[in-house]
Length: 371
Image 1 (cartoon, helix red, strand yellow):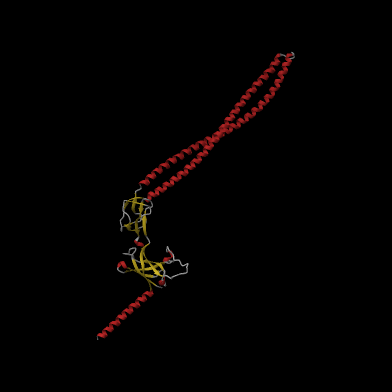
Image 2 (cartoon, helix red, strand yellow):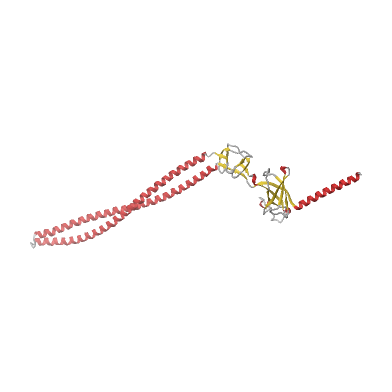
């Protein structure tokens, strides 16, 4: 009786283990199974300041929820505000200087136009008068030469009593009068020459004014370029002042608080780690030997160790186009011809129907249905 009972128990155990083995191998055949799986988040970021400075306030603690755009931390902006004020004074002074130069340029241009016009007209008028006077002087000098000859001839005739003294006096007076007239015209000629020289000097001064206008234009352009540079610097300082406020880039939970205030930080140093728990997914590294039948859309079961083996339903969302080792910092050297075949793994992303109680970084086991 005892032997029969023992035999029956052995047979039952064999059947149980046989069925369990069958189920195990059948499950492994129908599903791609991997223990190399982790819960991850699309929105996991280390938040940093873009400027150096002294952190004066840390407004959130670890595990505290935050909303997108909510203020998280502050850097003391005093030095930046001082720089901004100094720069604004420079900009104001430079803008006033440019305005004064533009007004001076405008006045000079108006004066230049008037002076050039007057000087040009005067030179043209005086040149015509001088030319006309030259002709008159030449004609008078020709006439004077004739009168001098007539006067000499009349004097000779008077000595011989061939003419009356009144005739001689008449011709002599004509000669003297014409000589005086010529001297007057020559004085007028010299005065016109001096006036023409003055007009030429005025025209030259107008040209000097024109060069001054050109220099002013160059100076204005240089100062406007300097002003643009100052204004660009002002924009940069205002941006830096804005960077002294650290805001949440998305809704989430503070995963880690790296520092406590007050603390002097360099730009780029981590301040908070923020995670969006609504964007959790499972990433599994699957051996290339298990890739058969695994496609996007296949159903998957994710078992999380930290939650006592709780199972989560999901589906394959995407499969990486390259193996995980493709981007290794130290790639394998097979140039010598020596090669050992290694099992490659591919990252597979699995979307989850529910994510309650899940946390980024949890390890999991994954079974992907083959099709």
